[in-house]
Image (cartoon, rainbow, N blue to C red; front, side, top):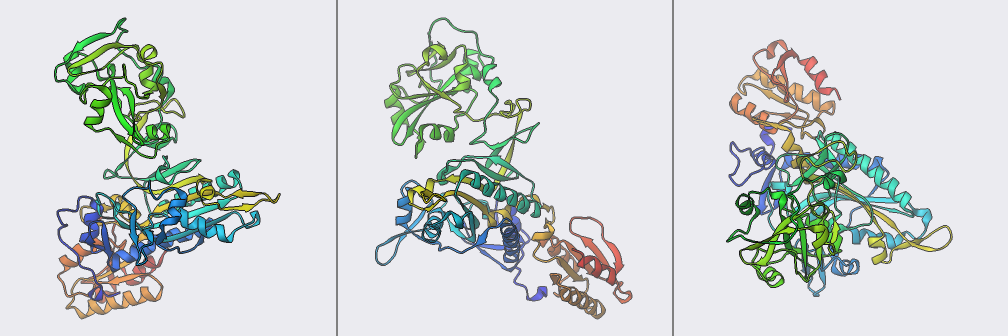
Length: 567
């Protein structure tokens, strides 16, 4: 490809609204342009990279035995109503009506559609197992699109779905996809962790793992053991039981003590006033679970994990109660709520229940109670793990390591769905005994366009992109230093032609630009191998430089071509 003919509008500076490094680089390197918030056009260079990613995904999906299909993006609302998700998915679901006033949704995912398809075509256990996948544009009306392709409203996704006759079969299908994902992300040159996760709105009855690209810009927090392979999303992360039983607390106070705490609503105000540590306090937070108030109690130095609470209550919607509701439930403004005397269900975290005594709001303005003994005063509470794991917590698996925290970008997610969709959509098969059984399903997603951004968050330097080999838009960048030097131009054209004939993707910078401009653009777009044709062109000598190395070497053009053709 001649660069003079390539639609490649590079920028010297990124727009101010581009916060993430990947967003800045993709705009500057001419990979994408924004049409509307969270909606992007892929320019030729960006489309080439996206196709490379799609090809990696296809090869590994095919290798794992999956078969490619393409399903409609526009889905009947009736299918979503049958599965029970239409009303609970939330405002992220893009809804519309056709001219006949029939309701549809633009697919953010395709569990309903694939289940409906297989329901009509697969009726016998002899047709199982079956895994189908697609690579397709998805739509989610994000409240706050940001970071370029990392959180958009229209994005490219690979979603796969497995159908088995047993849970043992599902486990095999799940592990095949799990290993395929490891191969995909390794081929992309990604630093990542596979972590235990919550199933979220997709739901399911079995295990689930997220694949997290490690990056400071990541919106997810990963808790990982420093000794074993345990890792989990913060939503799911557990912590060692021994730590719960060994939490040092204040000495037990024999009787309840009413404390005057004027205007002090926060623990960071109360702790210095009472000369105590945050862990001596009991937080009482009022939540609305499917419209019903519930009090959640955690130790003062811990944070409520809303996903764990939501799962414990089997709630579809969980949200923090507003000020008016909190005052109605507790009789006091926010900041003075406490567990004593409440007539709503109480959920108390395990770490709180081993406290000898603690301090909590008195449900009265400007007052708290000291001497609350959880084992006595909160014995009627529902107990469990309702808090976020914290750095330094003991590992829940090996019990020897400690948890450390990383920021991560979710690039893939694998679920054991079980019968969640097959039962609600009446989709099943006849087993060997002639009995009707629901499919045992799995679901496996990769955000392909998000993966592009995640790779760039890890592969760049101060000059621009440093593409991993398998993702690069071109393998070789041929650059004649002087556009006016006929010898240099002829040799550069010769080298580019030889490489193209050998099947090597090559970009020839034939522009009439200054050398500095060419080299800056070359660094910015980050093609792995650069062949520079300069003053030694007449002798057949060129400079060879890898994008991830600082030093160029002078070699004969035949050596350069040979190296460029190596796989």
